[in-house]
Image (cartoon, rainbow, N blue to C red; front, side, top):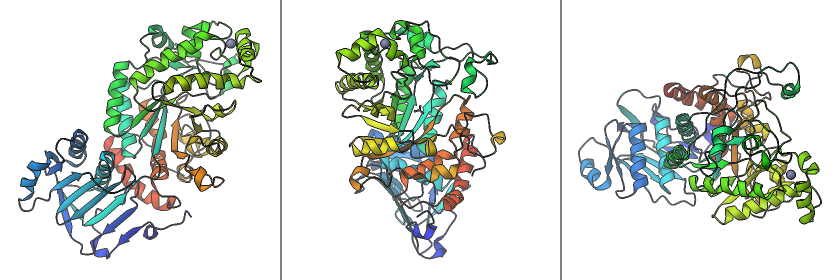
Length: 540
Ligand code: ACM
Ligand code: ZN
């Protein structure tokens, strides 16, 4: 299945004389590239007009992207038509109306009439512009001859995500925009943003002003990768405070920036575990009452939100209420991973709640919280996503599962007709090393996830029936940041593995070839260099 060649990848090369410099074989490889046999080209000229339907703000914005990426000059449709009559000026046109069930579908037509980028919706046009941008990346000069061709593409999955953890290390708001640019370059449409954890709270809550102010600060961080080290006598810490949070104003600005690039931000407030940064500010929300401190070390913490304290749900609703005001995403991620129940087992409040609800095991207390949260979110027209642990005590009805501990949770959830996002550690954890030689890479959390392994991911497991397979919405890479210290380090971990994930998310089932992908990767890497993105320059 993996051994397909270019020829079988639905590329019809009708006569090789048509093969000019530009061949449209970018990442993601479009489903169909049909080059015209006559070998003719139409020039894409810098400063040329790009026409777009007037009175469509999104298409106007798309025309501005064509300006930024292709050097064109936006012109509302009517004005451009006149210009097109001039000889030797090939009009570039952005249009809607492509017939497809997939809103992200696009078609690029290059012929004697010019260059047409047509989408099934505005997002499709955006992806078409990105494909043109990548196609001409290698070309020098102000006029690029484009071979006459028809290029058609649409992504396989509706959910094409990437997760970034900004809790363990904080990356400034301005950098998040660059990160979003990188996602857009790779056809990603969901940015899963991990905003809170034991080591830092990064989301401003106006009703709880102390939360981000105090919860976002830790005076130092453990040195070394051994989680067990934190309790040992020989643990050492750096002298570097880690701090920072995003104001709601900054977040709204970032949400809008992402939306223009057809990326929805799915914020995550991880609960009821991974909450020690919040507990450090509000110790009464923990089972023992604390005191707690923002954790300067890694690993699963036994201290979690108290499930029996009514103030816990009040707190969650206050936080999620403001989160929903800032983030318009239908999906809200509520975490749910790695939440030990040792405190709940000993806590009188939790035990009383368990008795009151007639529950058999502590895991069901988490389901109780999830169901309350689900109701609250539903009241705001939102739906929850949880890590696959949320399956353990019985899942709330409408929840979507993010399968990270392998494929098992995702398979189970799909069989129960829950929607699933596949993000197994084996193929998606890009905090792992990408080369066998660890000394050739910055210090990391461990593991080994080479580019080829990411590329090999098939998000729909064979065990599922065709009907069950429809519950797999898509896949994503996760970048946890315990050992990721700077924006350039983020990029190093992300690239080029995001390019591999891009083809997992876009290419039709069974139509991937790693060898052939790596040939196209060279072009994308030149682009990374020109744009100043750091990346891992070798791969396995
Ligand atoms: C996770 O990696 N703890 C979801
Ligand atoms: Zn408790």
